[in-house]
Length: 348
Ligand code: ADP
Ligand code: MN
Ligand code: MN
Ligand code: MN
Image (cartoon, rainbow, N blue to C red; front, top):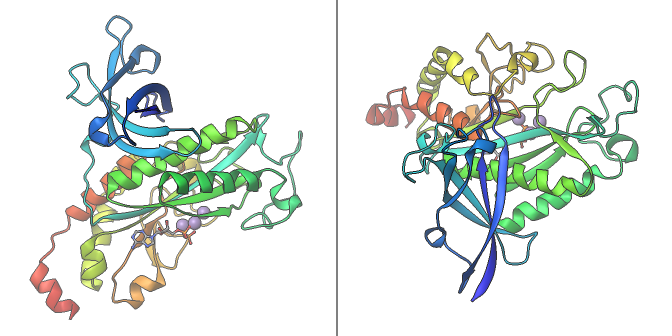
């Protein structure tokens, strides 16, 4: 038997943005544990905005398991928060009710800022660094400093070693701002991995004395970029059947559901979706081919393959909850009737 370090990870009850929490328990297993072998556990919900003081127990239900490459015999255990009965999802548990489908694929582009001493990494103590321009995909000390790249590389290695489908990195438009991409098949799987990648980034940067600022417009109404979390999505039908008519119906459904999408696309998004700097106004829905100023960008590849493939919803922000984002996207897609035979014939 081996003693494994199980890190139970969950989302707390803070609003409007849930925080990641985690605590460790040691259990013996003959080999790396499966999900079924991991027991329910509890925590004090009165310290996480999830319960009143008097009956404060909440239950952690393991829902996904990954190796923890930073610990010897470490296990990352993604959990849902349940009521004391162990079966009723807590109100803060958005994962329990998401629409899911293995054929629905999501690629999330998580943007964020490194922060040190209350300002973006690389910003001088007073004032601003040279304006935006050279930082996006930049290289060299004056553009990215001396530690950011070390962190993003280490984060990439840890994610890959954990089996998280990390797909890439780039330095972003503002100084101190970066992005990583996570791709997954199924809403829960993709969103679990975004949350775990966020967790691993927060844990990793502790030792560097650096914080992660996830807010979508940390520098307010300035010429400095905000942070998004573009959600790229496709369903089996979009990839295999698609077609212009279906696409147009889909976009009409997205337009009607605009407010429902904005409601779960992250707080303070009006600060970011201003209609300027490659954003569409939060009040308007638009789509366009290769248009980075649209709500939904339609890649050239989509049009070139007969309106098949994936679309990019550019509105979700860096603090959005990927469970809710993916679920809302699937809800809107599901509202569009699919007359399979008719559409198949049209696509021939
Ligand atoms: P950009 O910065 O130009 O918007 P990125 O390369 O950062 O593009 O992100 C593109 C994202 O699209 C990646 O996360 C990728 O996984 C995702 N993606 C690619 N193909 C599909 C697909 N068929 N379905 C869903 N997402 C996809
Ligand atoms: Mn990107
Ligand atoms: Mn980006
Ligand atoms: Mn993008």
